Image: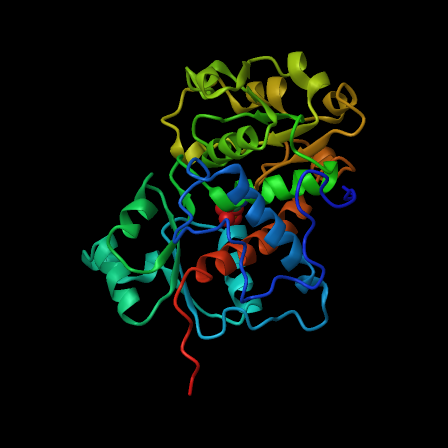
Length: 337
Ligand code: CP
C-alpha cells in the first residue's frame, strides 16, 4: 500500500527528528498500560513523535543517542515475533542497553513469582520494562511493585497499546486522517487485545468503528462503547475505509465458538471477491501473525490494498516514540563521568 501525504489532522512532525531535550509537553505519564487511559492529545503526541523517528530508520547510520545510558528489559511471558524484536531494535536505535528475559528458560520454573522475577531484574538496573503476559492486568500489577516504567506489550485479551498506535499511524499515513473514517475490526473481537486497544484509539480520534464477526466472537454490549456491531460482512463492506483483520485466537478460546474453520472462512475471510465489493481505496490491516486461507487469502494479504508490512515498519517508529516519551519523564541518565 502506498502512503499518502503527511497527516492532515495533526501537527506536522518536526523536520529533523525529535529533540531529546524537549519531548512533547502533553506527555506526562510514567507508564504506557493501555489506550483506554490516554487522551486524544496524548495519542497524537505518540503518532507525531513516531513520524519524526521514522526518518531515523531510513538513514545509513540508524542510531541516535536519545536513550544512551538507559536500560530496557523485554519481559515476554508469551511468544512474539513483531513486538519483541521491534522493541529490542527500537531501544538499540535510541542507544539504550537492551536485555531479553525468556520466561521458558527462567527460574519461574523453580517457583519464583512474576513480581519477584521483575524485582530481581530491576535490581540489576532497569529503567523500562516491556511486558507481555497472558493474564489481563499483569503489566498494571507490575507498575505497582517496581520503580521502572512499564510498557504493556499485550496482556491477555485486554490491551495491546503499541499495536493500536502503529495501526493508527498506518491508517493516518495511508488516508491522511483518522477522523471521519469508517474502520471495521473483523473476526475474533472477544479474545483480541488488539481490538480493545483499537476501539479506544479509533473512537478517541473520531473514527466510526464497526465490530464484525460471528455472534459468538463479538461480546454482548459492545455498542455501549459507541461501536456498531454487524454479523454479516457483506452488510458493512461497502462502507468501510479500513478493515483490520483479526486473527482467530484459538489459544484463548474454550472451543465450540463456531462450527469449523472452513465455515468461519466462508463467511468472514477477506477474499479478492469481497475486496471488489468494497471501496476502491480500501485499506486492509492485520496485526499479525496472519493465517493465510483462514482470515484472509494470500492474494489479499500480499495485494495492493494490504498495509500489513507497513504496519510492521511503523511499529518500530511507534516503539521508539514510546520509549523516548517515557524516558523523557525520568531523571537524567548517568553521564558516565
Ligand atoms: N502483532 C503482534 O503483537 O505480533 P507478535 O505476537 O508477533 O508480537
